[in-house]
Length: 245
Length: 153
Image 1 (cartoon, rainbow over the protein chains, first blue to last red):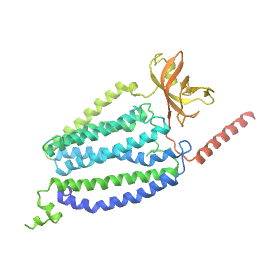
Image 2: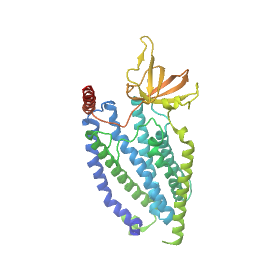
Image 3: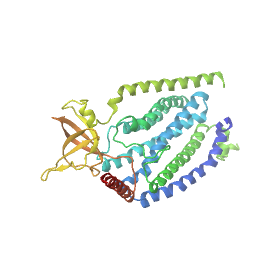
Image 4: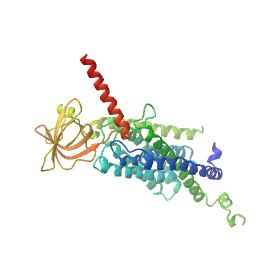
């Protein structure tokens, strides 16, 4: 277990796994998007504009899933002080911020024709916006220290504190009256979406998860090379001339 | 586990529990202020004062929409199937405005009538193709007709 936290071992293992994550993204993503955006039947009420759900919902799920992963890496960084978990916090934050921004943007583009407004300050939209600020805060805090490892640990603490926002995002539509609708896809019980649309949504969600992993492994590998640039294994891995000297 | 690491783990768990409890109390205290809208029942219970700006949410009652022939004036009734609130609005309604569907209107009460300055359509969580929606509507109509003939016999 601890063997995989060793930078050179992780670097190589991640390099082996990464292409498979990319392949899985395409295998799930291409049929889901082509079917969802083109062949799926239009919604009985919204017509064509509902198709943005095939982008919006997978992004929203990853925006929260990535946050849990970032907080988990943050806890590991604070407990074990391993370099890899500190780098993981920093690698996840920009990906999560990107997915959160996409969630907000696609939601706004859908909200204008459907609700009649780009933005309302209801509990769901506001808590998702807070999630974006949390990601940006983690990125900012990590870079606010001269010592990058101290910065990473401060950011890890913020990531853990922000964890309280996640149940608020998820349950906001049940706890309060919101303009945002309740959940369509349920793990327990029947989903409120017809099967002819639902499978593409679930496939798109899988694609988004695999894209997240693909992107994360790439960022982590790069962060590792930068953090360990003085070490011999980096020179050997990159087959630099200086390795022989 | 190393005692120092164990200590850090306990500190993190305590932090999360503390934050969780603190935010639960805060949210419980804020509860009604975080609601995006009030229902017609809330209004009848006197939860909102006359003249105060707030949001009203509910379903547009069937056959209640009356449009003016010359102006953009429109009036309709919002219901939560228990109480009704009459609404007056001057402007263009969103594309998804439909009787039997939900709306959220911003405005204030004047002599029991809600004067709206903005009307938003609230979409529900149901997604289906038109044929499926038709089939469900037909099945419901058939069931209702069946029930009616049975009661007549």
